Length: 410
Ligand SMILES: [Zn+2]
Image 1 (cartoon, rainbow, N blue to C red):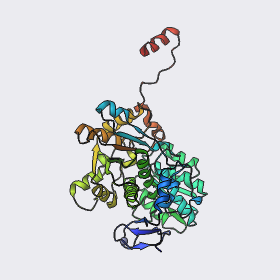
Image 2: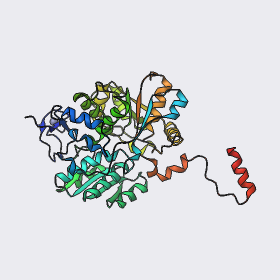
Image 3: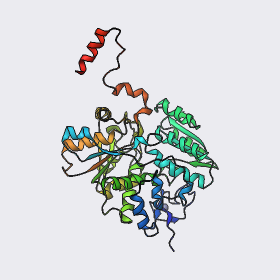
């Protein structure tokens, strides 16, 4: 009988049994989890896709943990999908939807990652985890390590909001602040020591977790369920490309097991100053050459490197990469605020890029697109005064001035 799950090298195809294979393949390629579609029991998967369970673990036949009863979970996933009213008003297109990941337990898509990564870490017997972060990844790792009863160290980039450091501390993790580029050697050092689980992104050059992106896949499953089939395109804010690849893997597997007959185009959404996949696509090769520098107010996606697997996902899906300027990002944050969504700058990239595609007229009127809103802006309190409208006023001291204030609303 074929084993239902195994690890497979994304570069050379060599296979390994599921285990703490944290150094990747001998060839240097990252490993990913593969599933036997028949063993995933299609009827079971179908019934669970229509179920309204409390977490993404309802998709356990396509997740790496053998027994979901042992999952470290806080009800992550099952996030809302609703039409983007602002883009509808501005461009008259009613097929743009927001997938609101800000309503996860630590207010970002990263909770999908760590519910799987920390569940696997604990199942393998680890009691300590380490990671690097620009914010969201670190506080999510801290929260799920806390739920798992594991110690956690997070190396934060100095550009990260101090709110992130203190949130990690609230969850009992040790926050360590260093330079943006100083994080990687420190994580490699700690993760190379016995007993430390590397809760780092898929494809990290060093000890890396191959399991967390399996959680990202469930965004694809939810979109299929919520939209009655795969959308025409999915717009994803991209730093290293793990989320984009994870969602693509989900659509690919959903097609393999017969849950959706087609897959969407994947669209990588960049800030112009950190447009790594856009540049790699323009170069036309299989490599993703590192950027000499990366800058943007969208700190969470300000990476100089991205995985070849993400570039491959763009090509395999027939997708593309789009980049927008800083003022377009801030405008998208304000626009989302006006319809009740508090997105961080990097998360607004998907909507800013959707606006650009609508302006360029490359979206057909009948196409349906999902914009992933990855994380909440509440974790960046320093930026809130810049996007808050109208300006805050002190209470007027007399009735006449109160009348003057209220007159604006009549
Ligand atoms: Zn290999």
